[in-house]
Image (tube, rainbow, N blue to C red; front, side, top):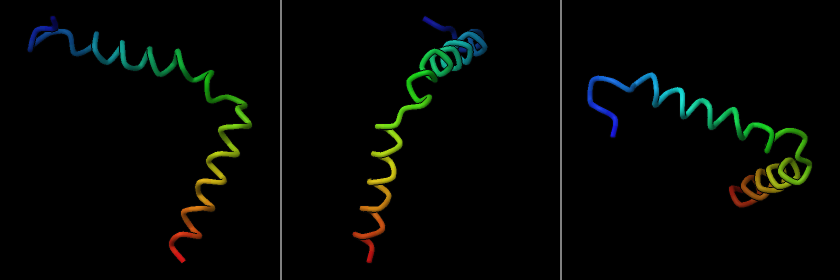
Length: 48
C-alpha cells in the first residue's frame, strides 16, 4: 500500500509508464480512425 506522504512519484511513474506502454495501440490504426470519423459524423447528424 502506498503511504499518504510517499509514493506520489511512484504512482505517477506507473501511470505514465502504462500510457507509454499502450501508445502503440493507437498508432496507424485505420479502423480506429474510421470509427472516430463515423462517430463524429453521427453526432453532428443527431444534433441537426
